[in-house]
Image 1 (spheres, rainbow, N blue to C red):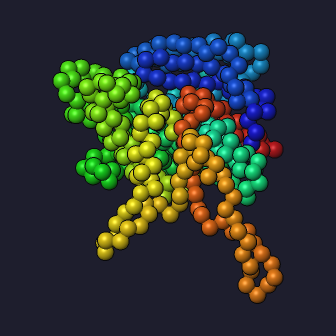
Image 2: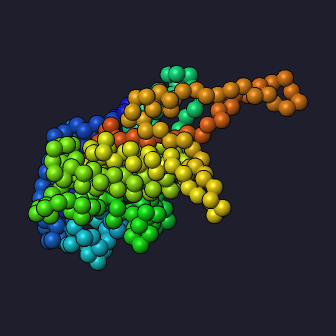
Image 3: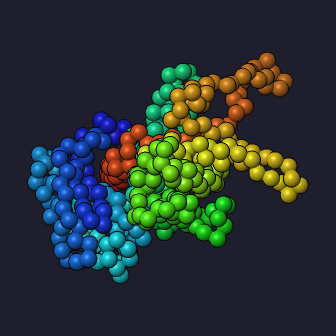
Length: 373
């Protein structure tokens, strides 16, 4: 599916607890200036009216009719049926609201709602890092190609999504890839998000800082302290990001063991990758102990941080060799090193989510049209 040459239009929404941002996408790109409205998160009727009005205003700006509405919305939710459940940051939706069916009735077009982590991964798989990697592998005549991707979002929470062979893996309850609830090897009594989130960096920094009186410092402030070698709490800030990286690396190692695909990281905290990625890679490419005390690699695959140009060049290098087929005079190419890549998003989470929402809708509309034919 080539979303870049598709001429169909899809209405989209970036739904936050404070603001809703409405837009329209054609061929994978926004075609209007986004429209922002307050979410009115604590007043259900006003919130629903805001959503309808926002999409209608976008529709009024278009010269052609949209084929679908597609957007990310916080969970828990029955995404397949468009029903939103009990939300923390949108309290008006408590008890379950059939948002998708309501919008379908009003606009008379299909409506698709998904988790933001899922759409982030889908956007990166179809229009981001996955095709970019495969194009560069093709350019150097490597036979290797990648078809699977795990997308991770870092910020207030720890989110994720999984794409396999260009298909978004949603699960039977619309809650596949809820990575935030996985366990932590470093802190077994906690779930993963407690070590991989904004509050994790704040907590570890406050624990190690000396005479720090401001408990409201955000990660961007702590990042600045970590980059300032003369700051009295420079070491505490570095410890906070290192521990964050250790926890993230542990979770990613588990996820890569299951998915065996490319990993891409997005979200607000991805901008601090220079501080946490060394610890991530130490965990992923580190060692574990058997019961007999023998050291074994954490992963079967070798993982490369392709944000680093030298590692990227090593990653795409063709390590194939010719091997004989026993009993014949024929040879096959064989690459003995299974390897994966990890990197930060080049699209950015918001754009990747938009591309994912567009691609998901176009794919679903295609299936409907094929069924009719």
